[in-house]
Length: 418
Ligand code: NAD
Image (tube, rainbow, N blue to C red):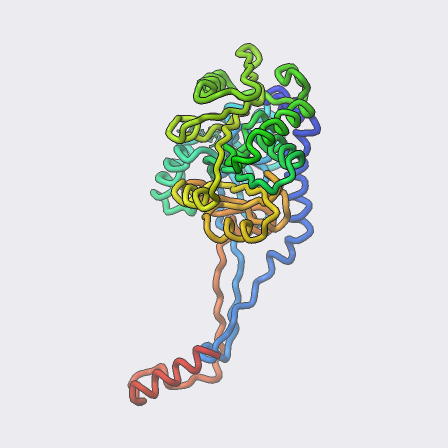
């Protein structure tokens, strides 16, 4: 698997383990440890109206789940949802991405030698195969990928009324206030942005930096990039590659959108683009309108935090929102006033691996969430079960209604409130 991830994306064993295999093994271990608890029927609250009796919530598997994955973390994003689907008692059909073909082939072999096909099946291929699968009726659909394809997945699911979870992407902003310690802030941003050559759904897409520290932060970012990948990142064994020529050309096209403050080198032969910092980028340029999904970091400065909040509220809800500041009030305001899939304060990406934080988007960045118990819940129907006993059968609910309406209302409200 490590060799396949290296061949497809130039991932080093350490990075591949930390962001792919280790994540799945961690989810698996966590599910095994907690599954007995998650499976237990949960007690519902009773009211006087439903006494004598008991109310319980029974998790029930949906049935057969379809899981469609993208290419950027091809192992993690296919197998982490699978852990949830299996834990919740479902059968599953997996569709890895055709753009990471070596990883897809190894995963297909793994699945075929491990599970009977009628329990867990895998279908390799691209658009045509996914469309053919979506013609079938599935009891739940879990899709990770772009918003464009997410829309057609949801439309296809509507034909069978299949519930969908959409894990999409978008532009995740990273706001840096002047009170942030520069060196650690720069290292954490450069790590989250340039791992896997920026091809991470929760990578900071662009920076909004308080003007007074803009130049110093750019210098600190350049130092961090140098420490991580050496003087020529294009030959660094620890730096990722762009997935294919089409994405390479799209990304190189962004380089002319502003002033290159750092990086800018590229090699079409190796499908590699150096970590690049851009300034003077207009908001209406493609690099600020489309998800970048590559190692290019536009830096925009601000002087008024209120303007940042207004800007955030007017843009589609991001999958992740990053804020660097020590100011508690600013931290609280960003959480309370800006809708986003998740928030990570004073770091990037690490909210993903915290146990029991559900991971997912909202609005344009998706719907539904998973990881830990959220994965179990994502693939379960919560079935309400009310059991009444035969004794105790107050006549009030049955016609003929003898109480005056005012008395009836008072008794009803009293009983509902208990
Ligand atoms: P994509 O939408 O192009 O492809 C995703 C999957 O859909 C693949 O398996 C592909 O074979 C299939 N597919 C492609 N075109 C299709 C079509 N027209 N009809 C039906 N199926 C089709 O996405 P991608 O390029 O593989 O991945 C990049 C996107 O995924 C980015 O937007 C990124 O932000 C997002 N992403 C999100 C998460 C998350 O967890 N929220 C994680 C990784 C990537």
